Image 1 (tube, rainbow over the protein chains, first blue to last red):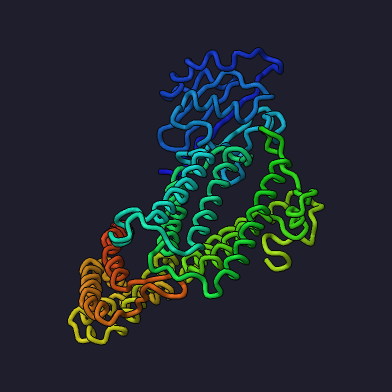
Image 2: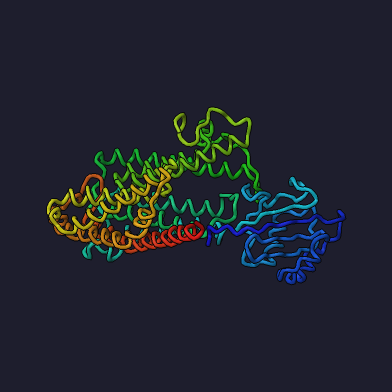
Length: 350
Length: 161
């Protein structure tokens, strides 16, 4: 199962002579004999040996692994003999309870002697972040429109394909659609992800959340019996302004974060305000993208005066606060000189 | 009690059970007076009462390090009958309440209204009843599994005495 911890103890023996020849991959065919239990022939040759902890021992022999090999390369080697555990699924660590080693880590820079022991953990089936994001955002975009156009079988038949007479309903559709189109485009062209993948079960969980709430909100906003906001056009204009400002803010932050990290790299730096006034929120919070996101949804809730939207905002806010606190904590841990005025998500408060 | 390490139950599972019982009592039996004279209410009250008397005796004796085998046996065996009994009582009670909920529009709000929200308690109760289908077997078989583990373990211990 996804949660199962399959540990195999990997022992990597450094090449007896530094600067040994490459050809690390060539002689892998010999490893399969070792699987049947004989362990002679592996030990003193500067080879990688993975010992299984479970009753059936898995032993693989790898030919010489060079000291400047990266964890990524070792994962690839492991996949060759265990194809069901592709690299994204492998977590290798020096200590069974320790942190996962990073793909970029180089063997000789790790705290190991001439023999390195690695522990393997199966992370379960993985799916790429990009795939998850695209799916979870395309859903709400499409689903909301089904309700907006009053597609049959949602409302009574006499309402099929009719259009609302309230301006705010049309405005809401534009805002909601714009929001998700923006997210899709950002996923494709703006964001730089630290991890390539996440566990497969997340896509079901995430899509249920996004698609479910989108349907729930859209049902009421586009309902024939929808009641427009109590304070009329004033309320709608104010809320729309909040929404637009927060969308621009959120986008500005995404761009600023992207510019912090060169393409293809995984560097992490403290984000700072830029010339763009929307980024000045970095002075007060660690995750202004989340601040603006909450703001957008509050704007949308005020604009539509719809309780399900307010509930969606609340749930989103709760989740983003958890993420912001985590991010804030890791910034504090990683950078000694982190600005002390900053709060995770709400200036001065949270 | 689970998170304080006093008894070995999971907080999630126990909270779930407590919530479901509070719901049955408060949101169904208390709220819909007409079902209070139903036999199904007697059924689940008896089932819960016997279960809890045994369960808390089990916890108490365990904490005193003096657990009679009878209590352990009762806790892990009587559920086989008491659980289905309780579930039947609960479902029949909810089912009996439905027409009255529908008639009175109990806890329900309909469109149009200022906050563009609606809630149909009748439909909600039906969803609750449906949710028993995936949930009950899981809980029941979890207990059966526990029974096998714990009662056979004791048997082995007895062999060495």
